[in-house]
Image 1 (tube, rainbow, N blue to C red):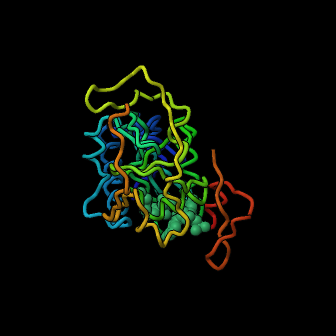
Image 2 (cartoon, rainbow, N blue to C red; image 1 turned 45 degrees about the vertical axis):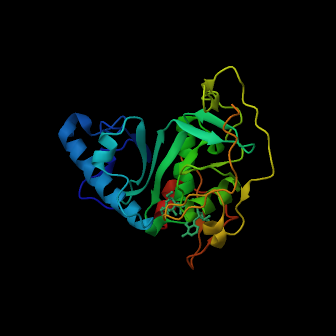
Image 3 (cartoon, rainbow, N blue to C red; image 1 turned 90 degrees about the vertical axis):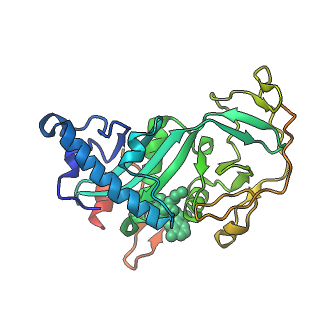
Amino acid sequence: MEYSFRVAELFPKEVSLVGNDLIPVNCPGLPHLGVQVVKDRMSQILETMGRASAEAQQLHSVITNTEKLRTSVDQKIYFFCDFSSNQVVGLLKIGKKKLFMFDLSGTQHEFTPMCILDFYVHESRQRQGCGKFLFEQVMREEGIPVEHFAIDRPSDKLLNFLRKHYNLAKIIPQVNNFVIFDGFFANRSDYAGKKNRWRGLDQDQTPDIQRASTFTILEDSSDYNNQPGIHLRNGQSHIPNFVPRRHNTTIGEVLQPSQNGSHDHHQPERSISSYARHM
Ligand SMILES: CC(C)(COP(=O)(O)OP(=O)(O)OC[C@H]1O[C@@H](n2cnc3c(N)ncnc32)[C@H](O)[C@@H]1OP(=O)(O)O)[C@@H](O)C(=O)NCCC(=O)NCCS
């Protein structure tokens, strides 16, 4: 998305963070532009990018805009910019949520995981490594491995993305709107105990994850809509066929597009500046 102002005045780095004060962290233009101008410009970006993201995902309503960010405690957005073309290329909105998640044995556990709430790369830049670049930066900044995220109703594109770049294909079926993968329960610091339906959380118990062979395995993207336990962004959802046991308690790396529009996965990774020259 292009803007009439210089995005470099708002964002200090290619990947920059904005919280609910609507002012990018370390905003370089803040001293001379002032708070209101910075907020107005951020608002323009949020509105256009949020609308584009909703359209790309065929959502009935916008899930990212100025008002939603301003009023959401615990949510933040990383924006990916290409300063050379003065464009905002993508966004990744994340936030912590208290969730009760089932492991493969059907035991429910309480966590407050970081969730992927919105993820969008402009159409003209998709499938060129921008999404991976942005995602890698966010994981680095947040210090969270990919398998520890919970994803709010992923699109089939995002499922493809996670499978391709991070080999995440084993989904642990849930009954809420979130998708988690194998590895979600391992080595977590935000574990709050097993959920006991009648007596509340039993904090004394430690995670005791038993692996049953009931992963939903993602193999063919054309079949995602028919997979059990996945709640997709386009509104279709598939409840897993089991009854839970409630009583138990820098610049990163991008792919190189080739001349004919496809891209070669085995090319060496490039910097964002070289990436921008191809746009
Ligand atoms: C999902 C998204 C953010 C990924 O960003 P990106 O810049 O395209 O990602 P990368 O270039 O780093 O990775 C490309 C991989 O993502 C997946 N992907 C991206 N676009 C895809 C599409 N149109 N169809 C299927 N898979 C797609 C594929 O695995 C692709 O690898 P491939 O081209 O070899 O098949 C981007 O495609 C997007 O904005 N999509 C529309 C909005 C959306 O669905 N967001 C997810 C919300 S939950």
